[in-house]
Picture 1: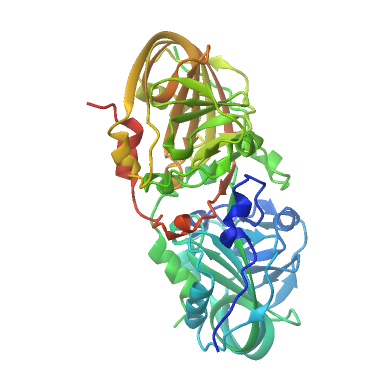
Picture 2: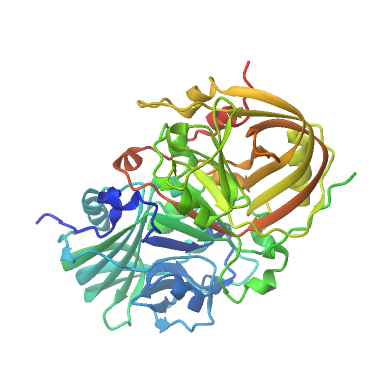
Length: 260
Length: 260
């Protein structure tokens, strides 16, 4: 089966945007990925403020306390022990990316057997490679391998080091949603180039940062974003960081490592 | 005389920002600098829309037709022949950076004899190196060397090549304003790391992209921005660009070259 997607926004209707009208499709991110890579795990942006910027996205929480999944306007924490909890509005995040999700029509997803195959399908289906995309996949997963990380205490270790002690699980025959944020390759250092996938089960009891998956049956909804907003940490610690470092290899390890 | 600046925003009052309140101090840019470096000179974002995002900033115009200076809510074009003209609202830009300028108190500027000395003073006075800053300097300039570029026609040459045929002038004993946008070093490829200075004389008849200056007497006003917004071009041409190229050396040539 071929993957056919209906892409919602204006990338293929450029004429509509030439009038300078206020853009739709804003991706908002809190801080930059290199700050997280360097161990800036203290939360500083409140979750209720984050949910004003978007109802769909991914991130982490204060003290790197698990994976953050934002879905349908609700924020969920997938802790290092696998437990899924609602996130209170006063909780904070050191890094997150959200959009006000306004996708095109749902389309059938591909029955892929790996996450890489899914990403390859989507690269063809959503060719806007210099734009951001929010991708929602609802369906049944024959298997899905996820990870989460445990709450850290200062002095914080770099993310690459913390990720070595991540917990990895595999769920089988589970219904749920993949929450994906795709960033262009030129966002290295600022966000995660490629698609950053988090998962949440339909019953909101299972989830995590996705390492691999086999999709049995799914629908795909996509929104392409042409506006990018970065909110920067005001702290002195943030200003002291050398953020221009090339940490692409280390990030690749963190994003896709499956443990031993 | 030491340069003493009062920095307006919240970098040094981080406690005020921990509540997640809507950030102030947004720097908005149209497209990314690497797109301009690669010859994307067709304007697509209207000037009236740009002025809604900010009243202070720098950029260029459709067909790379000179330097754009945004000051006190008005947009000015400094053409390749040196003539300064108001920019009509329906004109468009392929690249610009603006802020809603809300500076701290004015402070005495330094009587510097080079642009480099000015930048060095400001690096100490505004140490928020991982944030953006908008810097306005009003004063008398013993001399100021500026450049502009002439309108290009497609097929466009890369900016580095076009800059080789720039026009360079020096004004002496002129009163006017430096419009500066300072970007962190980790914005390479997206904006211009360091401070990008444009000039406009008090009588709005002289201006350009600043290559050097000697300041006799000046006041400095500064705003530090902790929110960064990038509006991306919707065109297919934009999506076809390889924006992750490292063009820092070429940009350095373009920004500071003084001709032969």
